[in-house]
View 1 (spheres, rainbow, N blue to C red):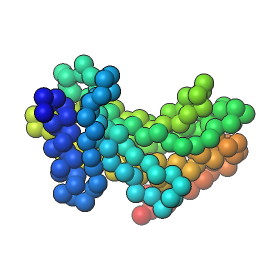
View 2 (cartoon, rainbow, N blue to C red):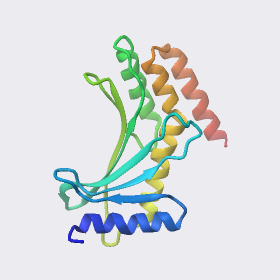
View 3 (tube, rainbow, N blue to C red):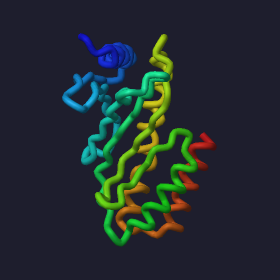
Length: 170
């Protein structure tokens, strides 16, 4: 294996698997860097989500790891303004932000990017970030989906605050 980033992702995947998290490494392919792919556990069998984690090319001082989830939500044209406003409000509440809305494509993704120390690379830091990403999309993704379907912004904001209060109270 000649790709040091792929090798690091392989070591991370090994650590995650030892901790019970299914993870595979997909080798680099053309312009696409090597990726570690982990599944997000969900009770929603219709939406099988995966986190694609990879080092950003040409970012090595420090290294930058990006976690990316494509979300299968339909965003109607009429709901774009509400969805955009709700996503901004939602991201302001999260410890690890990353919901994004592509206005032209009407696509929603979750992307979180951060610098990491690779000498040594702490698998615990990556595992924590993956847990936060998974939690955000599983616990709050349905609200983003509802926003994209035309739900009322005030109702969505109330539902968000109720969920955040429930998490805070344990």
